[in-house]
Image 1 (tube, rainbow, N blue to C red):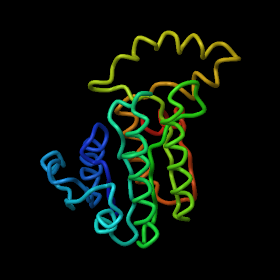
Image 2: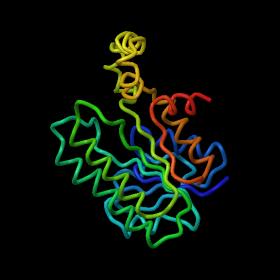
Image 3: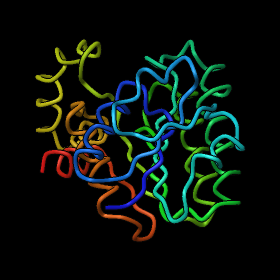
Image 4: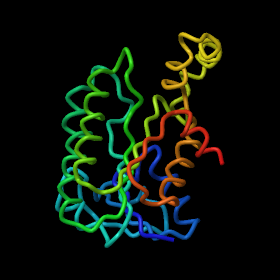
Length: 216
């Protein structure tokens, strides 16, 4: 099992991912602010610092590790465009800087499904994040979910029958699948699978791929 550093490991997906990776035998380092240290699952090495600071990220990296980037604005919506730039994109810029001066073997980044008719600012920031990470030259795995169903995030479940209908209409099927819903369990599973698979060039996991790899 390899060494994994997680930025954003105290959030909605991060805590479950850390616990799963530790249970599988990985050596996990969590970069966390002092106020969030108590949220880091037991067994992880903790490095105090900010995911918006390249020096702090660099301190959390070990040689040939996998870096998982989960930093993001909670409950994103169109009114949070400034936060997307100040937090989401700033964290990727800092990570890209840190990666360039470290021996990282593999980067895993949670982006967003696109194109889409809404959330333009969020999509623009995440697309730019993909570009910045790709330019580091380190093998990159990008996950592109649209909405992750789970604790505190259940409201779109009422849309599932509509998704099923659109998936049966040829002209709407591709969009319905690309902008489909994934579960928290599938997302954590897909991230863990990406860690386990390791570096193998650049990869993009869209919603169908997240569902498939996250369910196995």
